[in-house]
Length: 311
Image (tube, rainbow, N blue to C red; front, side, top):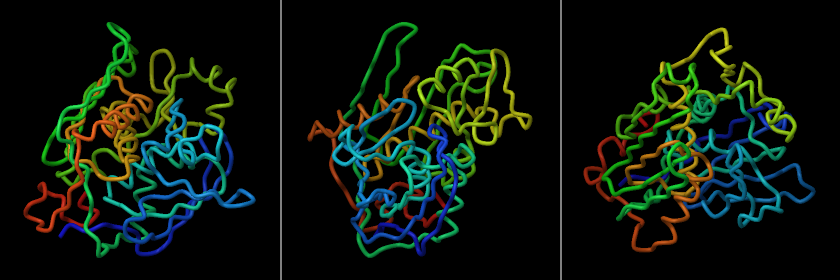
């Protein structure tokens, strides 16, 4: 039987929010089977639990933000996508995340630091079967046309494959890979995806700061690009780091669903908003999905039965 996973012990991290600039502490703790991933705002007078789900997403400007019941006026936790991506990469189903402010720390701008934190706590199998959400028919969201076109699609597939294509019309980005594919059955999330960092353009900095965003960003946690080139002295971690980070974000956005997907995801210029709209469209069509478990490892897609860090 493919089993649910949680942590063996707790682990902590301290950092700053990339948008808020606030210092924040995370404590990641084991959770019982069928709990899901639950954030807890421990800085509030009465701590508030915010279970992760597609319908809890309340804001998708610059990051994925969740609130209880998706209430945009309620307590929130923002910029959860990198941590959620790491949870997907390690196959984690159940986790309590105590957080001392409203934004997950950016750390190094990728998911690699979260992967290290989670693996340092250890991954433990639980007695309950892992529940996958299997896509039964294609669902697609499209927006714009011509130069503004963007889309994201989920299709039936026995496994979990993702592909992403970017188009920024920027010399520094255009000189790198524009399309990437990744198969979770390969077991190479940590090597091939997790280290890709978030990126930003100097021309957008003033606008973002004026909106109270990007206050914690610097060259230690963001790839900074001017009109022509990457400004970070060490350069890129991957030849196609830009598109890999967009895929890393998508993996995190999709894991907000609350169950690992069995599907093929493909996207062109998608982002947090479109990814969440795609999940909501999927859930709204009861004929498009089903929840499945695997009593025999042999019945699962290749690579899905191995313990982390195989994923």
